[in-house]
Length: 220
Image 1: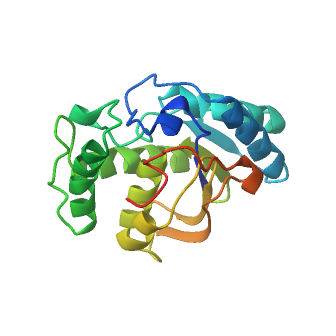
Image 2: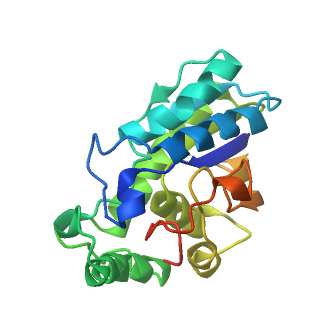
Image 3: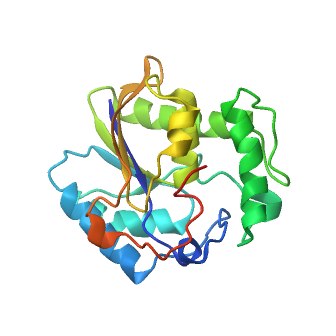
């Protein structure tokens, strides 16, 4: 199975540097709409068999042009939403981001029991993301190509724990800008291998926002 994990387009929270993880969450910016259009154009020739989005509205809005281009309905699936910020929700304080990331880093070191204050531990996160991907794979089969519009933290932490050819250090150190895409091959039973990591917006440098604070896209 080919799995494209796509980060959503830019949101006002990304620009402000806010931790926004609760549904429905913000929409996307004007630049984000340009990113979403470029995403659809760039992936126009990829034979998508399915397209999924998280429970946060920014993923559905991002997916709209891509869904139209392929004649698909973007399906909301629980489990691929961002890692919950808990007590740090909506904060723009750099210290709050460091406190949010601290237990996530411990997950990468093998301590999945580390808990984000007011939210969940690593066991919970991996179980719900694994469950969503397994449900998608069961629905479409091993010969399919499926896109999932998700979130920078969730994508990278899941890859750090599940991709056979990279680890948490790689996933945490490599940025994933808005509409960046990670291309994988595999299955829930055989495992997953990263084929390509496109950290920049899929439409190119013109769609980057160097002024955005965006804590989730950079080093975790």
